[in-house]
Length: 250
Image 1 (cartoon, rainbow, N blue to C red):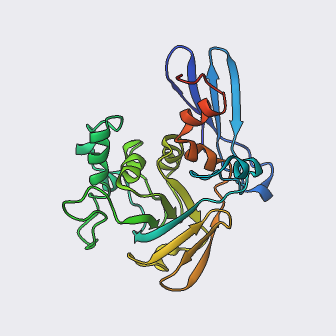
Image 2 (image 1 turned 90 degrees about the vertical axis):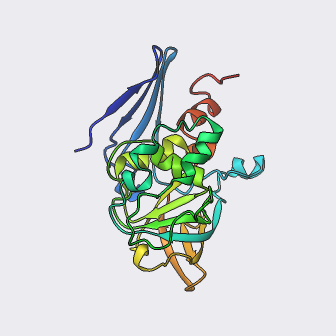
């Protein structure tokens, strides 16, 4: 059973995550609501799966139509099941502070360094700080282990745009949205057995589709829905400021 959790960020602001009952199964609801409580009152947002993603670079006209147009293209890096946070970013690197630009870049250079030696192709080449793999394709339970936010942050800092997994650990999925670092997309097929590291792929958010140009095959993805604009804004707090839920820093 999933239970509600609450995190306090000071005397006047809290962030709460709680389960949503699946009252409309045809809409394939994401099983969480995200609620901000501020000193000025309450503002609640419930995210449902739908095809409405605001892309990172888009005009005001396209945003007004609420049509998802974001596309990710590049080489993919394939991993298996149960890739945990120690493999994504080992604990010894958690002293790096992502808010510091130099340490943010350094954190990214260690992304997926904890993978076992059976992964002969490394996610980041030696003496490089960025990966050439823009998309990670994974099996089930990606991001299991600890609750460290450094895991999605490290992937984003490395230059990864999206992860396409068969399923996610709940905390990793939520941290990916909250930090706005990567799109945690879910596949309807077991793509880690359909794709190979180095394949050229495209993710079309509007079509909820992944195209493997190397093999010529296409695969359906589960729509990320209203979580797209949160990630696009740069995370949950940036989104809250953008939409007026909390006061802007300006």
